[in-house]
Amino acid sequence: MKLFKLFFCTVIFSLICTGSFAQSKKVDIKKKPVSSSKAPVNSQIKKADEISGKTKVKITTDMGVIVVRLYDATPKHRDNFIKLVEQKFYDSLLFHRVIQGFMIQGGDPMSKNAEPGAMLGMGGGDMERIPAEFDQKIIHKKGALAAARDGNPEKASSACQFYIVQGNPTPEEQLDMMSKQKGYVYTPEQKNIYKTKGGTPFLDMEYTVFGEVVSGLDIIDKIAAAEKDASDRPKKDIHMKMELIK
Image (cartoon, rainbow, N blue to C red; front, side, top):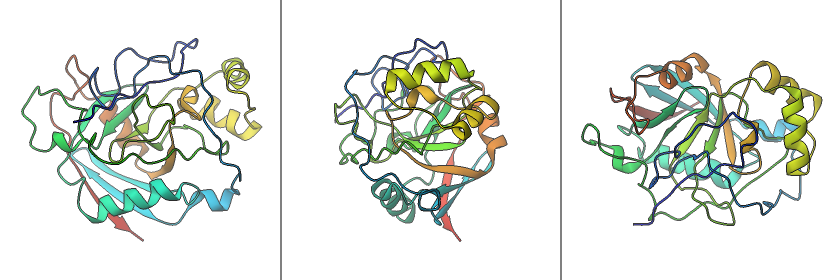
């Protein structure tokens, strides 16, 4: 089975924690340097109303309910996620990796009925990757729903593993530094979001964000704060169940 590991951009900024998005052999968001090659940006930047989308997904967890809205600006990821939700793929899976101040990760099919302490994060490698869908108007703000991936040069996404950003507020000077490194400029509105609400800007244009939380940000905080083991897996399982809602 193909192994997934989430690699993150170089952290000149001390926001990244150590460890993989799921572990050294998992589809994780690792806080490791990523290839310096530039990822392609969508040739057509979407308007704000096109980004938002109308499809919502209710994620029921053992700690409460999170509602996310999927972006129309990322149709491949949107349609893939909808398909898996309709197939009940995510039902009974776990949030298998949580890092406070960073993100919560789930979607590994191997997490269903996993034994306590089992290493998770490797599942889904036999599923076809989703091509990257990047847009400079879409950022890793708190509550961003994004796709995990391995270190493939195209930055294509895992077909099933995802993460929801918790993050931390980011000073403007760090945002300016990242802008220079990435080759684009954050808008005043984006800067304000990162400075006040927080997020993980070092992941922008590295991992595809395909939705955002519209209800339940406090549940993200609760899950991220869960007691966990050395592999960042919560010691008490946190299950999920998903359904499309209007």
